[in-house]
Image 1 (tube, rainbow, N blue to C red):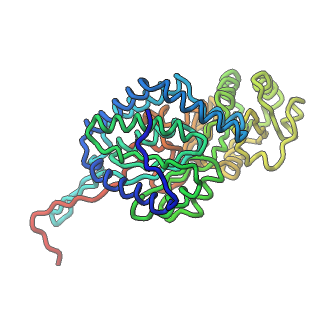
Image 2: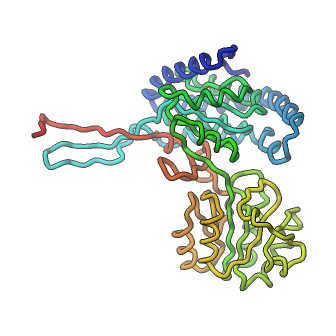
Length: 427
C-alpha cells in the first residue's frame, strides 16, 4: 500500500505550504470528529497494517539497502528494521490508543465566581503537529495515531533512510481515515529526502502549531536553534541506574542487565551505573560478570577498576555520553547524595533509577533527581509510552513546559476557558 502524497517540485517552499494548508483544513474537521470516528480510524489502520505487512516489509527492505549503503551503525539499523513482530506491535499500539478515553472536550476544572460566573477549563486539540524524526518507522504510526486520537492533524518528516517504510505505513493510516469518513490530509508525510524540508517546516508559522523532534542531539539542536514554532523537546537519554548499599544483589544484577542490554539503541537504555563504594568490592564483580557475558564494554573510575580488571578506564566525557551501544560507564559514589548530585549534573533529565530496599532512601532519590521519569527497583527501559499505558508515544519530553515524560494523546492537547454567565456586566 502506498501513501497519497504530494510530489514536490523545485519550489520546495511553495509545496511545503500546500501541505500546511491541507493540514489546517483537515484539522478543522478532526477537531470536530466524534471519538467513535477517531477510534474507527485507528482500528481500521491497524487492520490495514496487518493486511499489508508484506508490502511494508518490502518497502523496509528498500530502506535497509539504502541505509547500509550509507554505512549506518548497528543501533541505527536495528531501529530502522521492521519484521512481523514490530508491525504487529504498531497495529496493537493503534488499537490500544483507540481504547483510551477521549482526551478532547474533557472538563479539567470548574469553579464559580462571587458574581455568579461559572468558569470551566476544557481540553482541546493542539492543532497541526509537525513531527520530525530520524529513521524509526514505528514513529510514523505512533505519532500519527496519537495525533489523530487527540483531534489533531500531523505533518510527518521522517529520516531519509525510512522514507519507503513510512510511505507504506501512512498509506494504512489513510485507509483508516477514509473508512471513518475523515480527511486523509489529517496525516501527511513529507515525500522527499531533501533536508531543506526540515528548514521549511520550522518556519511555517500559522500553518504548524507545534514541532516535536524525535532523534539525536544534532537533530534536536538544529530544531531548537532554527524553529520559529514552539517545540516539545526530546533530548538525549543519558540514563542512570544507581545501586544503593541496601539493594538486593540478585535484583540489582537482573534489573541492570535489562536496563543496559535489552535494547542498547533506545533512549531509555541505562548508560551509566552508579554504585555505593561500600559494596563495590563485593557487588561490582558480580555485575561485571553479568555485563561481560552479555558483551557489554565497561568503563569505570579508579575504584571500579580496582574491583574488576575487566573494567577499562573512563574519561571525563564518558559521564556525559549517551552510547546507544553495548557500553556502560561505572562510577563509585559515597552515598545517595553524591549519586543524586552526579545525575543532576551529568544526566539528560530523561530517566534515572535507584535499586534499594530502603524506602526512605528511595523517596529521597525520587524527590530530588531532576528527571522526567524517576524509578525505584525497575529497569529504565520501561521509559516508554506503551509501557505507561498510553498505547504509544511520540517521544520522551525532557523539557519543562507543556509536557514532560512520555508524550501520548493527552499531552497533545491544550485547553481553553469556557465562561457561562446570566447577564453579568463588569463595573
